[in-house]
Length: 264
Image 1 (cartoon, helix red, strand yellow):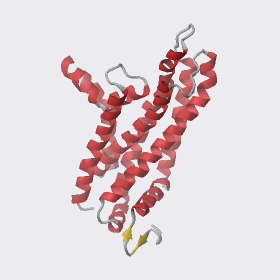
Image 2 (cartoon, rainbow, N blue to C red):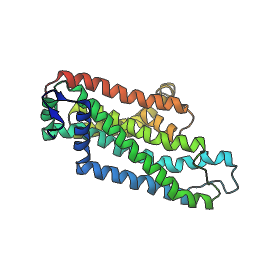
Image 3 (cartoon, helix red, strand yellow):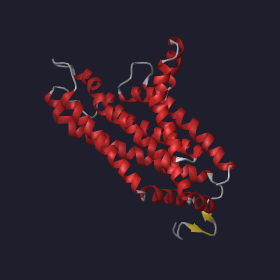
Image 4 (cartoon, helix red, strand yellow):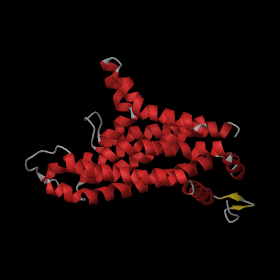
């Protein structure tokens, strides 16, 4: 951390954010994970735009967005695992390297460190995911037009999906950041977030039907599916976003309390 950021008065909020950005952007794993996010998002869009079983006949303009939304949503559902891994590593990597002691020495109150990590991580994931989504839209537009499913970018359904997908990924990353802070272990944190995203929905299906029906809307993956257009109507768009926010907050709040009280 440079002398310009640290002075005798302590580290300013902007300085903490700048320091966290330097740490996150300088990691090779961050670059690779974000690059894979771009490739997977655009790649799945191109694949589905060319091969998905769309209706054979003409589709009314006002109904096209509902058919093409999953073309872009598939990439979001796959890259949520990448966002989750990045979120865990953002904090757990500091514990494994020992850098966390330097961070907490520079910012003894600790909470600003976690807040800065959340801001830097959330904004980074959102921007990269948004660029991937709009890049995927431009890349798949010719293929969709050939199949009579071209949708203008101003369409509210499509625009909501292209903006909602990155927001969901940012919330998944923040949820994982909280898990990584609580567990302080990269392996343990990654196992937990993957279990929440992939295993928990399967386990819920095994429950009695009434319980499964009540629990399913509260699952993080259910919210993601609804936001990106794969949902089965169990949640409204804003309800799905609220569920994702609750998961992120439910992870970050206890993480902040634990970070404040435990030794590093």
